[in-house]
Length: 373
Image 1 (cartoon, helix red, strand yellow):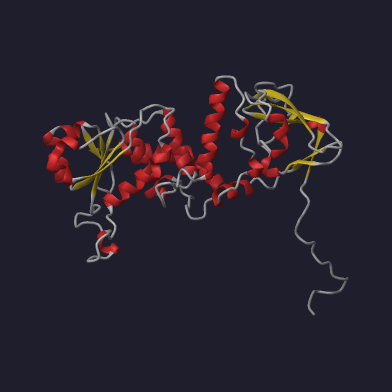
Image 2 (cartoon, helix red, strand yellow; image 1 turned 90 degrees about the vertical axis):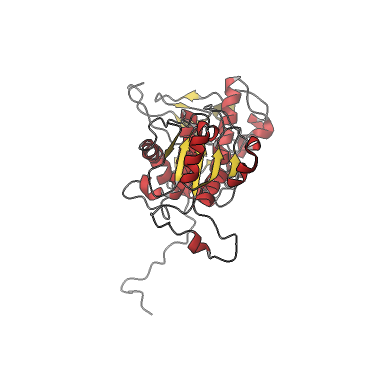
């Protein structure tokens, strides 16, 4: 089948390039009021002549490869699809609300065709990105409320949400099957809250920027090299967006880590990397001998030398005690869990304590007083 309709009220179609190369299929698209074409492949209408004027076109030239960054295009792709299905008020003779109303048959007023080469991976990925953006309530579970759900909750539901959206598309196109890399990018898109307020919304998002950083670290590990000094991301120097800050706040109830010798604070709770002991790997060592933390600015002298691994020392110049080690290629904790990259503090060299309260203490009233003045 050259093209298929995505289930639902949207006049949205997905398929391969054949639908645009065969005249008979093109006429079927016209009959369905398709006015916009999103090509997730290098495609041109130059040879169409005057007929090309019937369509608005956007082309994203990417390969169907799990390492391809398609995520960065999601915002612009979603905005293009939305504008095609529900035209905005660009002319002054009609109100935007009128243009966004459904047609008499209950479908969207406009029509969009999203295609790649075969209509299996790239085009389906962009369609799923749109569905997650447009109808989050369909894919978030019974208790999912997009307006109040935390970033942590979105991360927990990302796999389920993307899989549900894929199954939705497969009801109309059974061959739909994005590659594993694109599926992961869709999960990240969901974690980000599907930002589409501008074409550059993804590129500017802190979660996307951290994902790019992790990809860079993986490339460095693959060639067994430490990242360049100017590429290292120190998490305590990164300005977080609202959603990322919200996710960090959910981790703030833990314990801060201090040097056992001088009591210098090494990491607050939000920079502690949680990991789960693996009793099946090493049942004789159920407890962890390490505390793993994010890359922090006090590590700069140890990391900027370009070593793949090395020691971590207390940043207090009067102390300088060896407190742990780092390994860009990762470390296996005593509990059996692998952490990559690893910035490990030895539990025998540090203390974990509850953070000091910053709010003022409650006023204690004398006996017999109920607080009324």
